[in-house]
Length: 279
Image 1 (tube, helix red, strand yellow):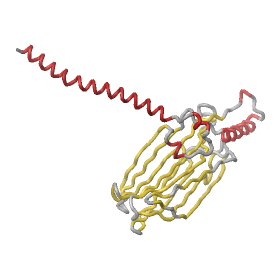
Image 2 (cartoon, one colour):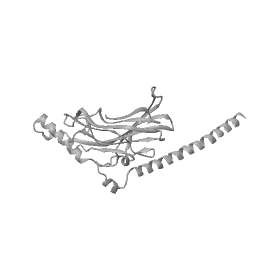
Image 3 (cartoon, one colour):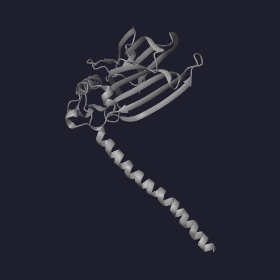
Image 4 (cartoon, helix red, strand yellow):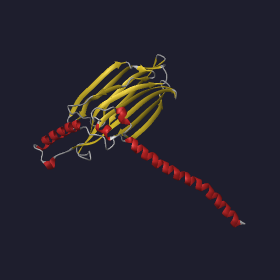
């Protein structure tokens, strides 16, 4: 009797396990298919790739092809206003097939060559330092001021830069970000929210590094301005500067900033701020 009972238990156990194993196997197969499909979609046709201008492309379009390397969300309560503030950060990196900005690469290399001449008098082949293109990187930041999950205003900012290294490991001459495009806009859930007096600051206020280890100041500021709304989404603001002087941003520098005043039913609520720091 005991033997029959144990066999029945084992059979029940097998009957329970087999469907799960089958489902897991199916999920793995489907997962592989989905991954393959995504890999297919992630790379556009060659003729599209050939048409990408690495110094002037739509970052919103490129975003879908870039790989996520870092993201985080921070939510906290603003005790002064009672609003919940949600800050989101996402960083993406261009794929291997992305075209290189030869113009910025040349400028970066020229500066390293000049530094080499300062250090060595005349650079010999074995003393040469090569400026290496690493990738294009794009950072998306947003600040959302919420009364509830369905009642909020959000400030969005996208910032894009070419990343270069002095030699492959980025250790000899460091890492440099040649920032070339900044975009921002606002989204609201209803017309009770509005944005007034936005300011845009871009560049380096003081002591930013060049590739040749000298510093520079290059700073733009625009505002106060008012956004133009199309329903509950504002028109995208786009700023593109090609730093033809070859000026590069060093790590940890505040290089792009948007400040705007958020109002609800005509009453000031909070200054929304997004700040881009390359590191």
